[in-house]
Length: 137
Image 1 (cartoon, rainbow, N blue to C red):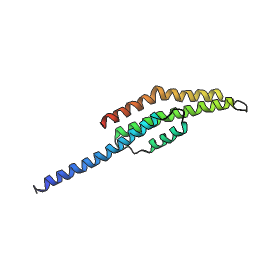
Image 2: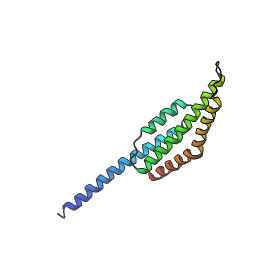
Image 3: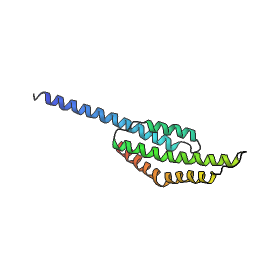
Image 4: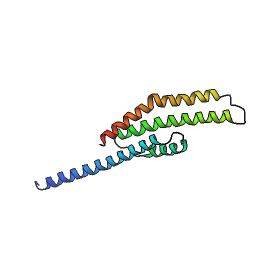
């Protein structure tokens, strides 16, 4: 019985390291996806939407990874929806048809999303992503 214990202990460490390694790899991939989204050109809304979708689908098993993913998804979703809203207003103003009566409300809603992203959601995203990066050093 005594001889089995070191083997069981070694097996336990190996299993724990395997799980930690898989978790570490998952978290590194998540950090890379957040950084890709952050570094993408601001004017490339379609590209950023694709990167956001990729980030949203990334697995996040640890509480730190889940927090970073979800907070960054929220921050960038608000930002992109706001940018799309302002682009829609610009198109309506420059288009040949009549200006929609909801134009000012649409612009206000878009600007509110951008403001919420920059004031609340983006700092929460950056904090959570930084904590995850530091965890994976």
